[in-house]
Length: 173
Image (cartoon, rainbow, N blue to C red; front, side, top):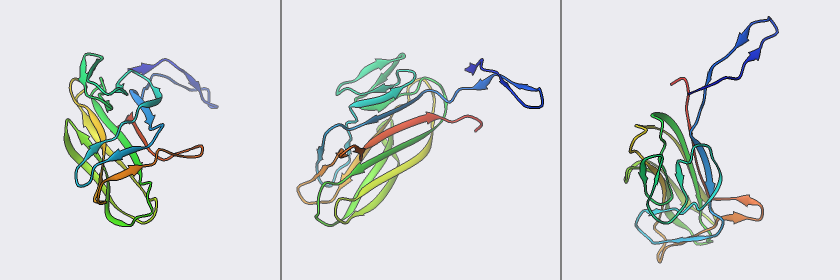
């Protein structure tokens, strides 16, 4: 799509018809979430900051968004293209362990992950460029811990958000 905004340059020339970098969204956890040990668990980012085109499902069930069947807590962009996806999780424990992972999943398959060692309340963050077909692809963020008994993920620290998920369509690639 295009934006009809016109920018007048000092030289007198004008620029028009900029491509939009949408759909885009940002969501976060408002409360802690516990994940099981030694398995990837979908992070439930239930609170949206914004969702420009209604492509993020912030509910616990599968819904249809823009004609796309979208599983819980997933982003299903309805415009084909490349997207920058980002996510962060935070361990709420002073227990040290070696495998604390945040991963991007596309259509239920891992496409990116960042491995971090937890050393007292650490975070794991990732960003990754993905391609979406605009008709059926969806993305979610999952966490993994090797901490015995699982881990509680800390959503906030005062006014700071420690767990978030976002995506935006890239233009020019």
